[in-house]
Length: 109
Image (cartoon, rainbow, N blue to C red; front, side, top):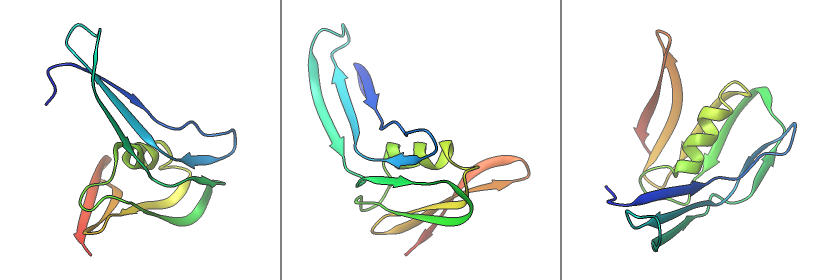
């Protein structure tokens, strides 16, 4: 939990494409005047044409949890693909819908 202000930057997609790349986070002090931390997570560079018949699997560089960028990608593009799964080194995480609610299913690899 941060005592400051966090600013996140996620990649934009070109029209007609689903894009994934680096996720950046800057943490500022509570006044917003000074950067106290910088973080970057690489998800590789992916530009893919949406395909509602495709089960898409993203290979994460993280060991346990998907990055914020990977989770945002799965949520944002959930209707563009048949399914989206993020595989970390330890888990396979899939966005699922059950009884009208979205959730994450996680299984050990």
